[in-house]
Length: 390
Length: 159
Ligand SMILES: [Zn+2]
Image 1: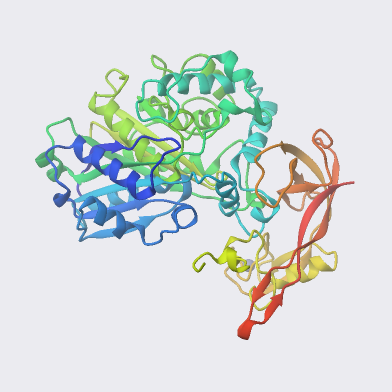
Image 2: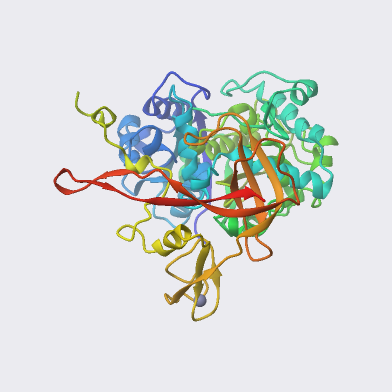
């Protein structure tokens, strides 16, 4: 069944609206990552994967991986390429690194991901978002910016299951509270339920704090075979245990449901099966809270609660510290922001720290963790499971 | 000044929001030709009968390339509405009204609703598909020729 594969270190740049270029951000992330594994040098890395979605659009830079390799002093010999799955580009890179190392095609891969999205002209990123769904049909009608789509998801979930605006707001209050401890997050300030409920509307019922922002940032992790991991670190080893990535539709005309994410159910079932765990075994999770409603549906379709009970799950504190499964313990997208290719890497770093036992705020005794990304207008879902036990 | 194409009066097609619809660029050009005649159509597989949307040149079910064009209903019922009042993409004016519409059980998709103000459209309302002209792109041809491509797209309107 191949070799055991570990995540042994990670780091990220400061995330936010940055006075920096994309290459500046990859250097900051690379530095933070190498600093996290003092026993490893950039010369030990034999592969590089870079997750980035808008690189040609926002930075006019194709063929990104050799550029990042040059800047980080890496001389890859087994893999050196970019991976793109919009919001899941970084997680896709980790899945590919896992497969390459497990099969013996590489030993030590640096997986980085990031975006420089902010140009002084904010309309540019909104305009480019028209290319993230089916550009020729949905995009040409103005569909592609996430808020209108997720507004409908929220409206339908509220109608079908009785989810409330208060419950949506509770997700942002929790995640902003978690993010206030994260020195790399775009927003490091707590908000109250009142702040969230009284915030200006973006697309009703979604208000300002229900939506993640536009973000510049990068993050990087080191994935290695267990044998090599033991050479480089004395810290507790964290294994990649299972992965799943699924898509059942792209165009809006082919969506099976807006409130039950079939591709998420498929991806998570694959990941649970490969990892040999079930939803109740997950001690900590980083899920794709691009909007508050997303996190609520993710509790359900990841199997943390019954369908339709996602609103209650957050209301009862079951996704907070001390609950069934603390979710988005580093602040999630709602606090950290969302430089598409960076997000899956950021989630992996938080799970690594939680399982290693050195998180900003620790989930006591956590041994099994999960990350999830949705990408596009829920057109694909990506799940990884990590654990202290192989 | 060289290197900044916009200053030379040129238009970057790679930045355009609409597909290149002409038969010299697109094998599903009949979709747009039909739309110009007021028909909303898609492809159906002659071998297995699967109807796809968006239209295509390959059946995703049986991989046949034998396609025929069929008409879709041009009226439907609104299932859900979103109203974007600010931050709409370039090329659209707020409010950007999007609706999830069921074309009488044949197809449902998310589409823009034109000539509609915020608060005007709700679930249960009836809408129709209408064709609208799209500004043509002045494309640069050989020997400095400028090619004007007539284009069209579809949008919902409240009945
Ligand atoms: Zn067929």
